[in-house]
Length: 446
Length: 174
Image 1 (cartoon, chains in turn red, green):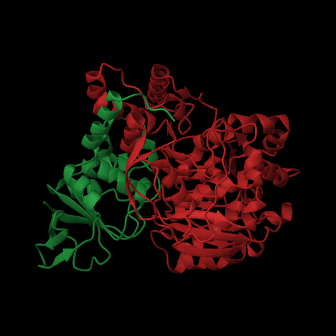
Image 2 (spheres, rainbow over the protein chains, first blue to last red):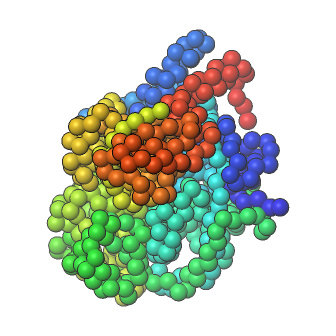
C-alpha cells in the first residue's frame, strides 16, 4: 500500500517504513530557524537546560549543525524597545559563537527569506519557532512550528521527540482562477468551509491541476494558512514549477516527492477554482470567510447574532489597510497591488501600509517601478518585517479602526485594540478597499 | 495526582493571542513576567480569579490554544497557578508546549458533568477526572508517551541523555 508525502519523508529519516499514527521517539530534523520573538529565550533555555552537560564534556554550548540553523530577526525590527534590541544582540552574539547564519534586520520574514535563499527543499524536515512555518510546505518539506523548549531541544540535538506521524487531509484543486481571484481567496474559502479546527492534527496536502498552474508565491500563500484551520502543516508535491524555482537556487540536494496514488488519506476535498470569487474574512476569525456577494448577509448576521467570534459589524468602512506579512508580501502580491492602485489614490481617511516581505522583494519592486506606483498613490512603505500583523508596531490599531489586511490572522486584539475590527483579504482586495475607504471588490480595477 | 478548582470557563477556539498578546512577548525572558498580562485583552478578570485560588483549572471548548506558537502562553497560565486545562481538543503546537513545561492537558469531548467552582481531582496515571463536587468519575483517553511526559514534568531529562550520547560519540554527519 502506498504512502503519503509525510509518511515518505519520515520513513526515510528514520530508516524504516512508518504509517500515520506511529510514534517516532526521536525524529532527526533537517533545518531549524528562530525569529526575534523566540530566538532569545530559546538560546537562554538551551544554556540553562544543557550548559552543564556541554561543560561536563569539555565543550562550549553549540548547536547540532551550524549549517542547518538560522536566526532571522523579523517580527519587531527595527527594534521598538530596548528589550527587543537586546534580544537581537543575543541572537547575533550567539550566532557568531556557533558559526550560524544570522540575517540582518530588514532582510525579511523567515518564511520568505529561507525559501528565496534555497535552504528549503523537498524531503526536508523543517522546524521554525513560528506557527507559520507551515508556509515552507510549498517546497515539499515537512515544516511545522514549535515553541521555545522544542526549539532549544532541537538546537542541542537536531531532533524532535515523541513525534506522531500525522494523517493527511488532501485538497484536490481543479480549474483556474477568474480575474481578481487569488490563492488567498482560495485558502480563505477552504478555511471557511472546514472551520478553525477543520484540519486539526492533520497535514493539509494540496494537489491537482489547480496547484500545478500556480506560481510559487501563490503556493506559499496557500500553505501559510494551513495552520488557520489547525492543520499540523501544509504540503505540496514537486512539479516542474518547483524544480524550475529551485534550479540555481537550492543549497541542498533536490529530489522530487509526491504521495502515492494509493496512499491513505484521512479526508479528501475537491475545490474548483473557477467557481471562486474574491473573499473577505470577517472579524475575529479567518474561518468567518464569505465571498463578496454574501457580505450584506454576513453583516446582517453579525448584527442579529453577535458573539465573541463574530462581533457586530455595522459598517463596511475601512480606516486602515495592510499588504505584507508571510502570507501575502511577496513580489507577485505587490504587482497586483500596483495594478489596482495605478491611476488611483488611497482614500483620504485610510492609512495604507505596504511592507515587502524581504529585502529581495523590496529591491525588485523598487527596480521595476512598482514601489513608485504604490507610494505615489499615497501608501506608506516600511522596511521588510512582519509589520502590523504582529500587533506591536508599524500601524497599531485604535478602538475605532476597521482594518483590511493581507495577513493571516484577524483575532480580536491581534493588531492593537480589542475593539478594532480586522478583515482578511487578497492584496488586490486590500488595495481596492484602500482606494474606496470601504470593503471593495478588486475586479473593477483589473 | 493533581487537584484544583474550575475558576474559568471559555468557549471554542481560544487562541494564544487571547492568552498573551504579542506586544508583551519580547519585553522579558522571565517566564513569570507573562503572568501579569494573561488574557489582558480577552478576559481582564482572569488574573484576579486565579489569585483567589491555590490551584486553578481552566475548562474550555474545542481547539484551545490555537494560533501562534508562543510558549509564553503556557507560562502565562502556569504562573497564574493554572495546574490543568480541560478542553474539547488542543492543537499540536500548544499541546507540545504544554508537554514541554509539564502543564497537564486533558482532552474531554463531553464536559457536561463539570461546571464553574467544581473541585476536581485529575489522576493522570489512572486516566480519570473525579469531580469531587458532583460525584462522577470521568475517564479520558491519553497516549501513553504523553502520560509519561506529563508525569515527568517535561522531556528535558530524556533530551539530556540523548545529548550525552551525541557529545560522547562522533560528530553527526549526513
